[in-house]
Amino acid sequence: MPKLAADYRFIPMLLVLAGTSAAFAQKAPANDASTIRVLLAAELETTLSSQMGGTLGELGASFGKRVAKSSVLARFNCNEAHARSKVAAAELAMAKQNLEAKKQLRKLDAVGDIEVSMANTEVLKADGARAMGEAQSSYCLVTAPFSGHVAKVHVKPFQTVSAGTPLFDLVSDGALKVRLNVPSSQLKELKPGLPLEVSIHETGKTYPAKVSMVNSRVDAVAQTVELEARLDNRFPELMAGMSGTARFNHDRR
Image 1: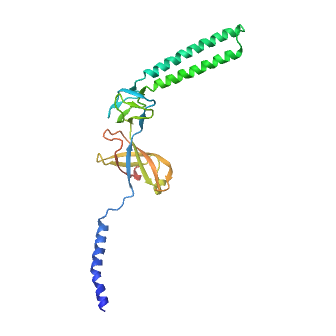
Image 2: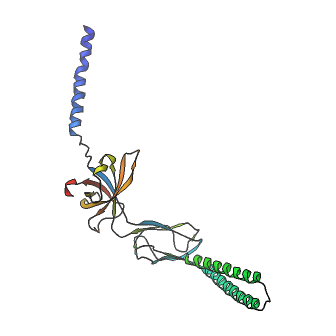
Image 3: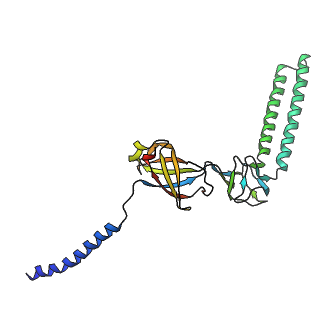
């Protein structure tokens, strides 16, 4: 009996722990499966890199600046490239003159067909060198492939860089996309046009949107499917990179 009495001392402690666990369970918020985390992304976003090695001049774009499509963001010092392009053009002109001379001599049976064919090949070779020179000269200007804002500048004016060096991060200023991952168990309800409400943390506001695309593959590990949605309107206060949550409204279809 003394042993049995000693065991009773643990009963009050167990009751306290059980009561605490029950109270914590009542206060803990329930997991809302209809709320999904989202990320705002630009329609177009890219890093522009140098297509050649050389020394930059003054930059035509700065951090945060809005740039129009095809506007010049940077220029390289391309005196050498322009000189090579002129040499290639001169060699092409010389090759064409040589070909015409060979053709005239062929009419007089002064040369054979092989000489004419070789002269024609030299023209093709020189034309290829000219095209390569023009292509290399075009790398001297770094232009914006689309209108948007400069999100980051990786280089400084008059800096010498190699081919492939990142120069600018460019983000388009068009409508933003909403990216989110939804449990694959809801896949049968997910269709383009499905409305949802997007709450953005940075602004504290809620915005209407609609699903625009459903991925054709399910993530087998996370058991989720990726979606893209479009906001119903353009909102100036929203920026790419903002995050928040989304709630589907199946009754608003």
